[in-house]
Amino acid sequence: MSVAGGPHVALAVLCQRIDLQPDGSADLIGIVDGLEVDIPADPSTPPLTVNVRAVIALRAGAVRGYRRIAVNGRFPSGSSGLAAAKSVHFSDQRPAVTLNLPLELELPERGTYEFDVLCDDTLLTVMTLDVR
Image (cartoon, rainbow, N blue to C red; front, side, top):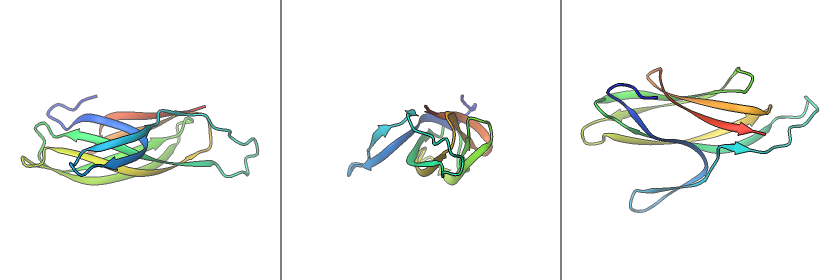
């Protein structure tokens, strides 16, 4: 999905770790698009929790100024999950932004978890995590 004029999504992934290099580049380690887990049959057992990072690289296009970038999660059942947001600033000197958001995910059910990436409440893209 793209918004006319920007910002444009260059990258939106879930990964295990990000290693920042001295030259300013970053290595994404363990890109995660699916997991195989044992979900307990006993509903009183706490859900499995995994820690991942949402890495979102945006290019401003024609957009300048402050924007609110949000990640809103949904469980496979459709109910709302975690939410995280950060304010970013696009300028002529900095027309690109890369966000590195730590996410602690509870996985109480099997299916596809969806994470909407929004800019000022406009959907840019959706990241997914398939739990089997």
